[in-house]
Length: 66
Image (tube, rainbow, N blue to C red; front, side, top):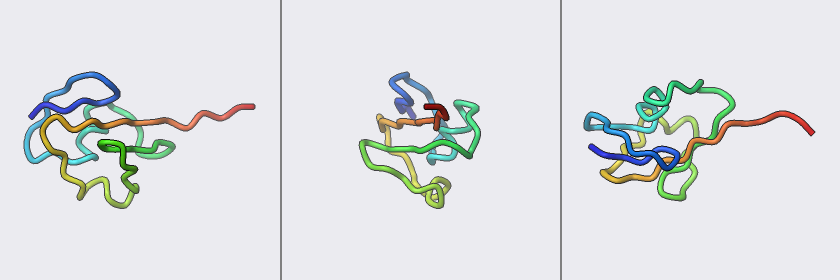
């Protein structure tokens, strides 16, 4: 199934969840926020939030500084 993660196309095996998208990117599970199709997905829901074909997933990392 094709999904878009941070603007790039990726193929994931169905059923795919937010947690699968994070594994695909190789990002840590802390210090990040995730939105799917413009809606924030709470961390507690990542493994249960199923992605649909052509979903737009945005993964944002926290940056410290000032």
